[in-house]
Amino acid sequence: MSAGHTSALKNVFHGIFLLMLAVTGALFTLHTLFGPATFLSALGVVVAFWLWLAAYAGATTLVLKRFESAPSALLVHGLTLVGLMLLPRIFPLNLLRLGLDLIGVHA
Image 1: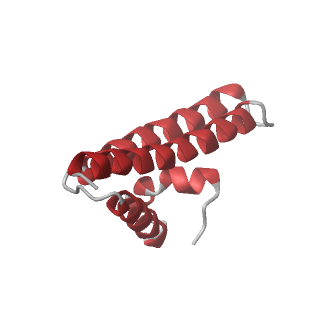
Image 2: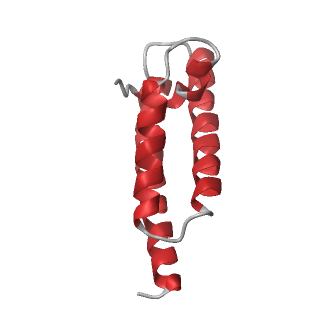
């Protein structure tokens, strides 16, 4: 397989993983906005999640630029999620794991 193919496959894996998080985020958004909370508080939570997801996507994209192989995308995403789940729930570290806590991922 040529370097272009492995890089393209790496981008596909990265995109699929981010798409899964975005779909989960969309479901979370609908559940939160139409839930029992007031609209403004729900909107604040939803905005916080999407800001976290944008930061997560940007950070993993920057890390993946250093790698060429397709499995590196799976490895980077897996290690970052495990690392985030292992962070203690104390300020300011809980801000790094905010999105996972909001969608209900628990270690």
